[in-house]
Image (cartoon, rainbow over all chains, first blue to last red; front, side, top):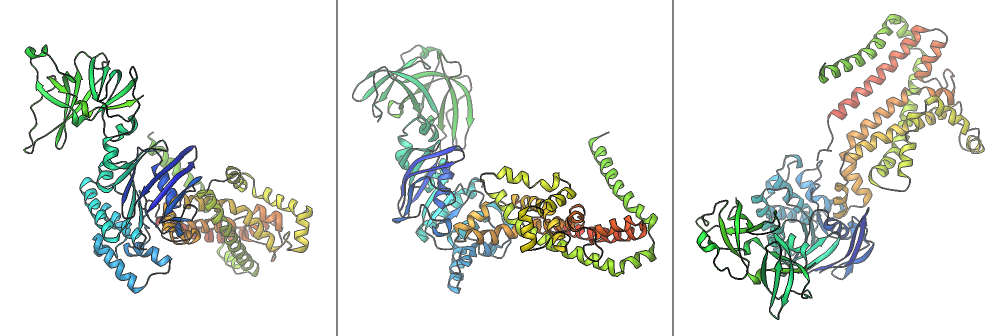
Length: 370
Length: 260
């Protein structure tokens, strides 16, 4: 098990504070966060390429915090891969074993097996210069895994690849993880990558851990606005609590000029009159009906709004719809809804300028204390 | 005038400047005198001495330049800017001034002690090596640093995570990757050393068959109005200089791994 406790480090004026998380043996943990959040610094410190100011890094109860990189026995793949350009693919893969003087005939067979697993057997005698992006990734993985280390640190290794290749390598990485019993710590800002590969995630912002835990728990229950934004809560607006009961919270949202009801499942201590940030994922907004002038003045239920469609963007399997609530006071306030296209590729017929009724389901609203 | 035309004219004018200077040697060139001077014992001594001291000075300079350049390229340390600035000394102070500074140093108690107990430098071949070394070390560091800066430190970082010590990581990744740059730096350092005059003459003087390097030979022949002899010496110097520079250009042209 990889156990990081209260890790602190500094790089120029940037400070990373009190980072703690655990990666169980054979598991995959993702360090996620925006660019410049400090996640790469944490990974480099674990790899021994930077010095920790305080805290501890333990790998199977062995404190490796102060050890130089060559004594940590871990595998590391940086973002730029750093394949040695003056060596062939085979020489790159064998580098670790050759340096450690462990390159025996048995190891040659293991390397051939590893190359087969990664599908690069035919490339072994090729120069690094002539490899494609995917082949370079596979070579970098093979080089990191060849010495037999069981902890693999990956720093956004697939960010430069196109989607199909990236997904192919995700599957390959999962297979390798099972085949070789590797524990993986991956740094990424790609949510899809983190959720595909990892069992648990740690969200870092401005050098501090915001939230850490099971990936679905973190996704479903972001702790604050920053985490909510990162984990895909696109619609965030302010509201004031007007009433609280055991299971329900009533809020007035000036930007909507409307009262909303939210389920009272927030972990924050919410109080009446408190200002909160309300959030809802775009895929949770429900388009209810197409409005006509006749029904416009009819009664609208709780959490229902009438909006004008400002723009429609076609996604691969959904439509992103930008909605402007009618009667709102903030001129630029826009809600974003994500409407799934059905299996035949059809979605509801919508046009820009059309007025629609939307529902913000109360159980899907997030409330964050400001 | 377009930028391209302006630049091409400037390039041609620069070439013409050196070309006219070189061709003007032909006015005083005498084939018979050239061979006579070239095959003379004094000229052969000058060539041997020049090649020997320049090679030793270059070797010493590179030995010190590689770790110095590595420190400047890879690490942040207290006084880095100061060290970096002081390395420009040979470029901002004339070689004669550097020679004078060396002479002044050897007249201090420490310098005198070194002269008396370790090695006599003033008016000796050792003095020539020292003068050339001091003159070229700054250039050597600059060039090696430029070569190292082109190589990503990430190679060494990855090599270390694969089990290599810091020195092994440098030896097996950065060093082979910038070998062309280091070799080119060595050749250019050598060519600067072989053409060095001001510091050499100040420290080692003008003693025929003792401290007479090729540039000193040119000066000594001019001093006695032996123009044809001076031209012959200049031709030898040009031949050696251009040969090594041409080799350096070929090496640099073969490219580096910086783009990876």
